Length: 493
Ligand SMILES: Cc1cc2nc3c(=O)[nH]c(=O)nc-3n(C[C@H](O)[C@H](O)[C@H](O)COP(=O)(O)OP(=O)(O)OC[C@H]3O[C@@H](n4cnc5c(N)ncnc54)[C@H](O)[C@@H]3O)c2cc1C
Image (cartoon, rainbow, N blue to C red; front, side, top):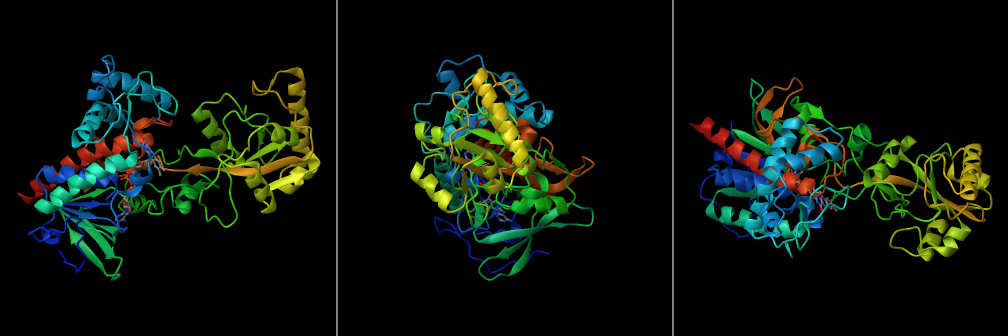
């Protein structure tokens, strides 16, 4: 049964639809981030009456603080730039290479076939792509330039989508409820999803809302340390916005969805945990070819070269370190001759970290190990061996090229770092129509998904594919919106 709850309808154009949205919704979209906004627009344009629930007080989710990349083959901007030799096949080959073959082939193929169109879609909506020159990824590079940057970063996408949502609110095709958190999916006796339970943040009232189709667009779980510890890292910090609590994962699990690639999460290396930071990332150590400094684990052992690594290789060091903890060590000469090892901060800031007990200082390597809580004999052995490599001009353990500094001038400095996450990469299993699948691979009828929730690794494998997260929002926002609407309208007949 449908219950109409007293709820503040928020439309930035101030016009409520004349149909009783909650009673007659065809499609419920949960989450009004980039992905949910595209899905809502697309479902409405396919003829559905759409209700969009958003738990915070605003639309946009993470994209308002994000960079501006999208990626796709055969976008109009590529043709304009004279790049005519790209193809879905070439993009797929790049995903295979960059993602180490861990993607779902059907989902990846669907994605690459639609990604160029998704770029064109945002282009036609009026996103400003600046000089419109396709570029390459800031991560591990594509074989062909197929990344496009919005002039205003993520906000560039948000502005045009906000306008599209408002037009449809004005037309009465979409109703948007802010401060309304979906806490559960409703299922009928056959397991089909037939709506949601939502809670109004103001009144704390909980009500059920029914609709033939529901699209989950709740984003990732990068701000939910419990889920990160369950699936990915014993220790990590986060730079994600607080809304990213993985609600869609919890709801999908409850209705029996399967999951894939949950173990994969490419976090950024070198985040320095500060006292009372409540898992928030704020400062990082410089970890890209910083002169002299070495990285060790709890046993005092080096784990890789500290220079010449690809983005993915660097991420893997932190992912594979015991307790995801990497200690960074330097000596006084390195400090005296280089800019601060804390990114974007000076040595004075570094001294502040010493006062706060974040950075340890010692006159000997043994003492430094004790202060850092790592194996003293292991660290002494490592430093002696490393200094030998510097003398010999060759690192026979890991092939580090920069051997300009031995660690020999006291005082020595050391501090602990963790990886930090921006977004998550695994997700509930789905088919190419964006329908959720259960653990046996069977369709769970009535529920679709899009956005970060679908899992970038299910599309792009275990690697960083430039612009993938945003392009997923568009490709799978459109696919989920169209399919959910068609399914819902069919149910109504
Ligand atoms: C700093 C930063 C930079 C980035 N830069 C890039 C980049 O350059 N390129 C790129 O491709 N990607 C980038 N990303 C990743 C990308 O922005 C996100 O993966 C993507 O925007 C996620 O979109 P989404 O709509 O799926 O989720 P979100 O943006 O997280 O939106 C989900 C929405 O759902 C709402 N919600 C959640 N649970 C519920 C619930 N239970 N009920 C109701 N509402 C709910 C949330 O409040 C939120 O508004 C970046 C991310 C960050 C944090």
